[in-house]
Structure formats: C-alpha cells, structure tokens
Length: 211
Image (cartoon, rainbow, N blue to C red; front, side, top):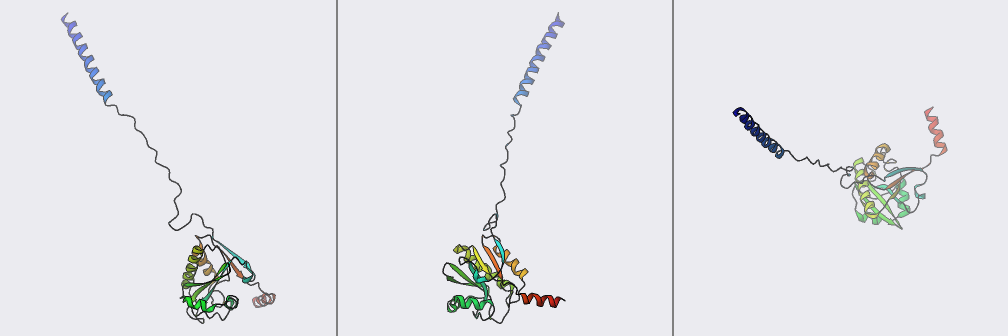
C-alpha cells in the first residue's frame, strides 16, 4: 500500500514539473520575424548638369553655307584683330558687316563674339590673336564652350558652320569634329557642317595625281 502511495506521489510531482517546463518553453517562443523588403532603386540619375538623353546631332551637307535656312544661326572662326581678310571669313564680313561692333566686344582667343542678325545669331569663334597665326585646338574648344553657353541661354538649337579651323587654319577635321561632339553632346543643339561641292576639274586633277 505504501509503495502504491509513493508511486502516486511521484506521478503527481512529475506531471507538475512537466507542466512548469512546457509553460516556460511557451513563454520563450519568439514572435515571427517581419521581413521588410528594401525599396527598389530606379535608374541612376545623370550627373548634375547633364541630361539623361542627348539630343545633339551633327549633319554634313554639300553646298553653300549662306543658303542655309535663315532660322539657323551661323558660326565660323576669326582672329582677335577681326581682320577676316581670307577664306570664308571674307563672306561673313561682307554679308554681316559691323566689324566695329565685333571689335568693341574685345573678345580674346578662347572666347566667342556674337552679332544678332534678324532672328538669328552670328557667332565669331576667336581662335587666335593675329590673322597670320594658326589656332590651337584648346582655343577652339574654349570658344565653342563660350558659344554653347550663349546658345543655351538664348534657346538656340540649330547652327550651321563650315569645317571650322580646317581651311586656311589647317586643323584636322577628325579632331575638330571630336571636339564638337564633346562640347555639345549633352545639349539639344543640331549642327550642320557645310562643304563646298567639289568641282569636276578638281576631281580630274586628283585622279591624275593618284596615277
């Protein structure tokens, strides 16, 4: 009889201990973890001062520069002394005149003088000090930067020009065109480059020289 009572006491004590153990375990159960989804990132914005997409275009035309639409601005290279006594600069001087107005602007190599003609601007890229000197690529690039700033400020989006610096000034067009693309790549400015059509007798002479 005593043995049965001991067994019953042991059984009751065990049940109590098991109950306490289960209660303790349930109080320590952690709440489910809430996983927060990181916000998705959109496309990386362009650097300050740049547009996401460029609207710049560079076109080539064979023909007379002065036959371009009158809504397009014009650009060419000059010296600081504003001589404009040779090459296409002569045509600019005769067509738009106002040389004294250009001189009053007192632009230096690496800058750009500007005249207003009706509804368009005429840009004079100052690439050297004296007319008999040769320009540098750095002065050309600086003058183009100056012209670009004026274009952006005045809403100019179309410019026609000759192969600037590559006539009597003897710069290389592959380098000049690279500078144009570098300067205007983040603008919506369209540049049309005019070249005079090659005369037939010039083609014959070149063919004769190759032979």
